[in-house]
Amino acid sequence: MFIKPLAIPEHILCAQALDSRTPATHPSKETFSNRAANLLSGYKGEKSMKYHLQFLPADDFFILHYVRLPNQNGYFQLDFLILSRWFHLIIEVKNIYDNVNFDDLGQVYRTIDGSVQVFGNPIEQINMQYRRLLNWLRKHDFPPVPIEKIVVYSRDDTYLRNITNDKVISDIVMHRDKIISKINFFMNKYQSPSLSETRLTDLSWQLLEEHEPEEGDGMDQFNIGYTDLIKGVICPACVAVPMHWKSGKWNCLSCGCTSKTAHRPTLADYALLVGEYINNRQARDFLRVKSIHTAKRLIQQERFQQFGKTSGRRYKIDVDKLLNAKMYDEFAKVHTKSAKVHSKSDKVHN
Ligand SMILES: [Zn+2]
Image (tube, rainbow, N blue to C red; front, side, top):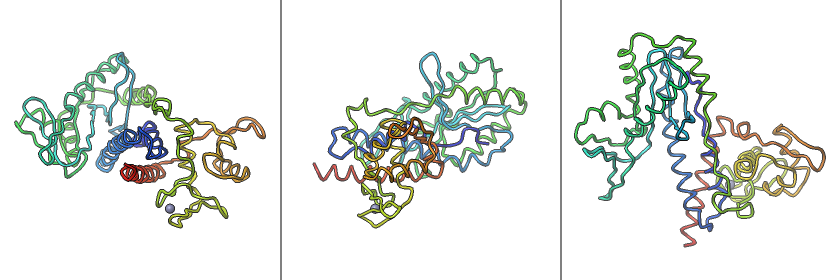
């Protein structure tokens, strides 16, 4: 069972918000777009694993998506960690299109149209994660449990080549449709439990408690200020901005689409980029609405925590509440589209 289910980590939401709210003319636009696209592609790869992992027996396997733990060298991060009483499994997910080659020098690369792109070696990467997890478990006095590790390529059409038929590579690297048979193999390999059920539960709690999500980069890191940001509600259908509030809903002048909830991702953008507290004046400016009453109604219907009275009232924007699991996908879609639109216009301007 998933004890830490899939959700887009906040630093990815931040990168996406920054990208979609940065005008095409900003000098860092391309950096923001590339970064947001890479992070989202990584998350999509991880998300595609859900289908396969849900076939694991729920009572025997505890699945954690995205675990980031502190250690003496800072932090280490695991895409998936699967815990059981018999063994633990670290999964590193790669979402790379076309082809990936592993050669005799430990180089990992893709060739497209004669040009070569070299990647970090995921086997070295997962070995490092293995050592760091092992140390973490020792430090927290958990009894030794065998730890297995695999690197999974999440796209079915990636052509993987193990050029020298290295057994280590063929044991560790695979496509995602091999995961379940690989886990079955580990289940046969480790038949006697190394952990009691209680210790397994303790371990799960401890991991959840020590997990520290990466913080999103605010605007300060990138030499971009509030006045540079694109304001207004983004149309969920065609990503035109701003939508106009009229007759109780958001109207898009470009495509005619209407929505009653399109302001939610915009409020989330505000929290991710500007700050988690918002007052009526700030909401009017960022949502591009003129009426104090409309802004008040829109914020109050979200039932955020409120602080202060009358004109000094501030609301604490709850990003998780705004972007529940279903909305996360919509949010990612809107932001990917809008990033594309902006980078297209980049080219036009150049
Ligand atoms: Zn539209």
